[in-house]
Image 1 (tube, rainbow, N blue to C red):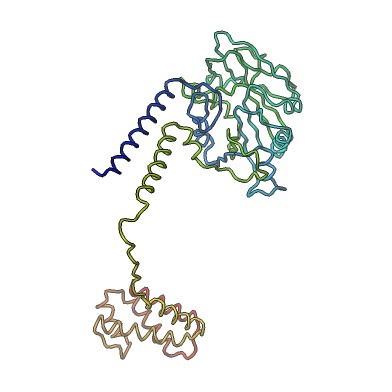
Image 2 (cartoon, helix red, strand yellow):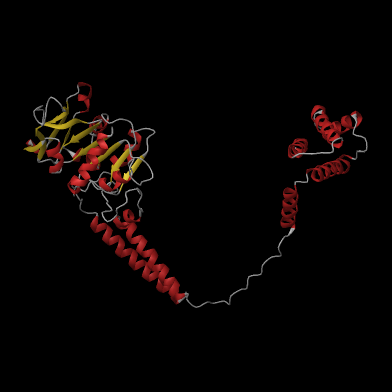
Amino acid sequence: MNKTLVTLLVIAATVITIAITIDYSNNRTVDWEESYNEKSNKPYGVSVFYKELSKLFEDQKMKTIYYTPYNYFYANSEDGYGDHVAEGNFILVGNSDYLVDADIEELLLFAGRGNTIFMSDYTFPQTLLDTLNLTVDSIKNKDIIAKLNFNNSSLTSKNTTIDKSESSAYFSKFVANNYKALGYVNDDPNFTNFLEIPFEDGTIYLHLEPRVFTNYNILKDQRYLYTEGVLSYLPNETIYFDSYTKFFDSYYGDAQEKSNLSWFLQQQSFKWAWYLALFLTLLFMVFNAKRRQRIIPIVKPLENTTVGFVKTISNLYYETQDHKNLIDKKITYFLEKIRSDYNLDTTNLNDEFITKLSQKSGKKKESVKKTINFINWLRTKNEFFEENLLKLNKHIEEFYS
């Protein structure tokens, strides 16, 4: 066996073994970090929720926002420089702490224009809480289990519980006569954790248990029903999903897509497969840097000038607008084709000729008669127009179709 090939095989086997070992060791423990990353399949990622959103909001577009709300919604507003005007639902689950005052202001403007904001987190930026006159506190959960309830009696069948929850947040202060309490925790209506807040022409929904939207809870038992109940309050409009990944260094908020390569590199198996492929490609280039065979010269085939000639002649006729010449030639070629194909005399294009041509060609007599009569009519004319040429061409094409 070739020594180079043996070397490559040994190196490949070594790298694969290392990759499998690392992947096995990394997968032995479960990562319970609450990332709320829409690309993460870990327990507290939100990839399942992210993928199901398009099914819950039927026939609606879903745009993933990789920019801050200030950059994106300012750019994509009536006075902005984006490629569309943003209208619909803005959804943010977890990680709301990155929002600065400018983001809060732009989100409130977005809601005020008749749109909807849905945010779920343990608390929210103080600027937003102060603007909406809210206070958030928390209570400890018995047996580390949180009970999530709806106020709406038609949704109580979707009530659920989540485990691994040491405490639950609730709104300890809000304007009760203006805001609507939609849900509460631990079977106590005084601990409101889901609010509907009218804001100018739009609506803001604030929810205080983001873990219920994670992969772990959506896939466990029937907890997904609670998620469906929460989202049922949102109108069936375009979804703007706030991504875990952000472009903080860009002033322009028009783009939504980002390469999926970063997601692949977060998966250990894919990452090592990618690095292995790059490494083996580099080795192949190194060992095959010297050509083993001289360069074979490329022999260009002879150029077919027929098409070019036809284009030149057709352009000439088109520019000169010589319709009579073209009509005469098309009639001549058509009759010559009939003589060669059907062995018919084309001297007299009379009824007898039409009957024979219909019988030999298998075409309907009425269709053949229209074509021949039109040709006879053209022969009586001295002046022709483009529509005469087009109609003649249509008759001939129909005859051969």
